[in-house]
Length: 370
Image (tube, rainbow, N blue to C red; front, top):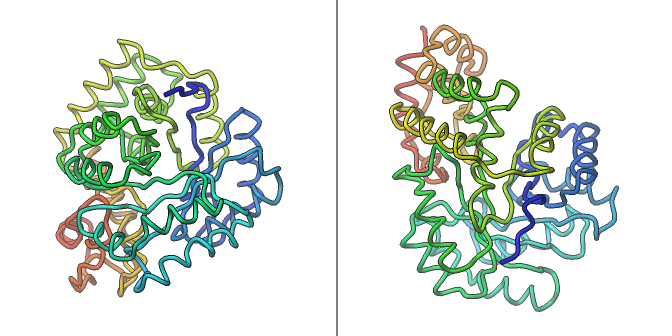
């Protein structure tokens, strides 16, 4: 499999600048132009990313020639798709929202052990094959959030799959819930293109614990913390693209600076990553990536990802006062951790398999002041 090492960076459109669904299109357009000018062309969005496909139309599709970019989007059967008909309509909605005649890379979204049957029951694998024959889809794949046994089964049963999108980052490499390494090995065994999502773990690896920061700064004071994470993923054999969910121009500039002339991790940097992994393994952080699937159906509108982000300040860096101050801002009355009613819809939607209701109780005990 031929892979261009200098074109491995992908632009993930889930965390665009602005407050969803009101994307800052002016800033996004500048970021799109910088990305393309640097020689990159892969853009990743999804039907359920609020405002993202419309933003792709405004900042990318309406401003650039179709042959200049590659567009990926996704069909989600586990959220807001009560019937097969509703699920299949997502493709046509995505085509309309993005204003393109075809999707380059089309994915079944976030397949895992508690939802893969729905994709089968709705005949979505056959649907993708039909639409590829019609020319509406160029390449078929899926994003995945479960273990290697199910992944191997899916790849055996669906040889039409051309690529797999996996959560891979150095903190999750041996994580028993995510199983990054084992899933990576299965995808490589089947010789599938691998697209990496969450290389910076929802931004957590851009602001790692103090011990990890020191390791990296002592080696190279000019390299960003995020650069280690993205280069770790990009250094793996078989990785086709590494998606970075960039939210501002500074992040775009940083990513371009080291991915335009990509160099795999050297031995010293690999040793730093090994030590960083041990630090993360010793901590008990809430492994939230801020995808926000949990918030879309929360009856109490609790800002779960932001609460967990505040809690991780307490857990990783001992910044308890800062964590409590953050909590006061992001958890107003009637939307606090203590307002959780235990319906667990958030846990059904969570691709990280988190015990969200339990963690919210812990956040209440540590951060909430009556």
